[in-house]
Image 1 (cartoon, rainbow, N blue to C red):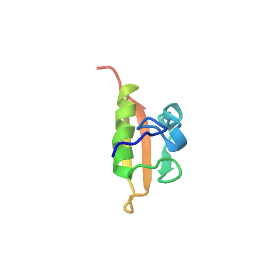
Image 2: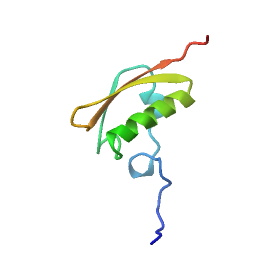
Image 3: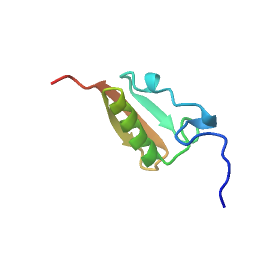
Image 4: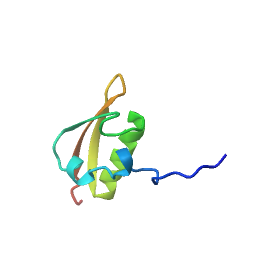
Length: 80
């Protein structure tokens, strides 16, 4: 049966947007499932790459073996 939800899908914890400007600033970030994101780590990996691309960046993403930690680093895509 259909249900009403409080937050549009694709938002971070508690309906807040993820801090993409911070996470995609070029530093290496370690994100923990349940703390920084709630979706499966494989989904977060795709979301990171998509968000980086929309901002003209490329993200290197690694998911831990137990699939609870996502490590990322974004770099600017150089104009060809």
